Amino acid sequence: MQRALEAARGGRPSPNPHVGAVVARGEQVIAIGHHERAGEAHAEIAAIRNAKGATEGATLYCTLEPCNHFGRTPPCTDAVLEAGFARVVIGCADPKPHVPGAVEKLRAAGLEVEVGVCEADARELIADFSRHISTGLPYAILKAAVTLDGRIATAEGDSQWITGEAARTEAHRMRDRADAVLVGVGTVLADDPSLTVRHVEGRDPIRIVLDTHLRTPPGARLLAGDGSAATWILHGPEASAERRAALAGATLIEVPSQGGRVDVRAAMKALGERDVVRLLVEGGGQVHGALLREGLAQAAAVFVAPKILGDAAARPLADAGPVSRIAQGWRLESPRVRTLGVDVLFEGELRRG
Image (cartoon, rainbow, N blue to C red; front, side, top):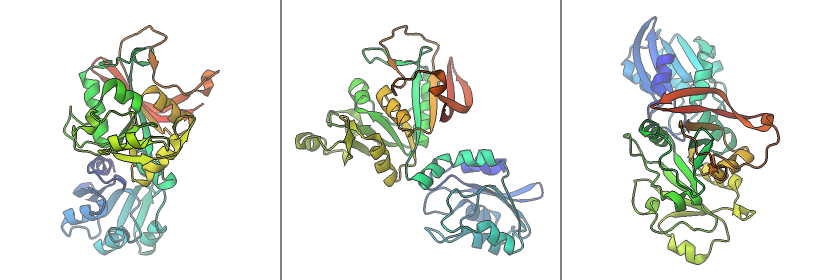
């Protein structure tokens, strides 16, 4: 199953989940497969094809319960039965199967089926897919680089660079794994980011800006052909016709506004409807705070640098409103901690209280 989990991390299957599969006979691994892209072969089918007929009486390990419906591809349960497996080992059940009953169908045909092997790892692998399929919303990861006193920029907005090269390289890997990266217009005005993948080989995510009044400059780098991905600007109904015309090079998406700002819940709904499954949120503090306040952030990736600004007016990681007790704050569930050069990365799912 660990081999299947490792294989599952390959490919770009969004909006489908990352899934891996291994065909084995005893301790011998016969073939490995993964789901490469939506519309292409699922992991089980890829592994069966790679086994080249050596599946009769073998065991199939798959990180996610095989599908049991006709979609872009036929049901994997039928292919598993046709391949003649004696046993199927499943990492975790499908969080929302289109047609339930895959495990029962395999058992009814005489196969031995075990569910829940390396289940925590298997569920973590599809956390973004589970969020999207269950709620229609993206799995939002708050990403930030902060000083030891929790600041993402000076009071004047200077933030380059808080962390070192190793941390910035990892941040670009995160962009490569995301469907889209989101910032507020304040970040665009302060930093003029391109939001592309540069320090590693990878694919540019969709660039998304929350910009109620369409203040994004037409010459901004994320609009000037710097990068291969599209740029979407989510704005409020109050944005003028003149500003809409000035930013015609971007995809403009109107959503309701609330209190003079884009309604972040409506914004997340709009992104989910457009198949944004994994969303990397790069801030700034107002955007991070709004997502925390509305319960729309599922995880965080915070790079901490060994630096102290010592300025109470410097910009914080998030402004989600007043908190009177430590117990009311947010925490990382079972955080993963890594050292990247002199910086430290904290990653994990977010829980409040």
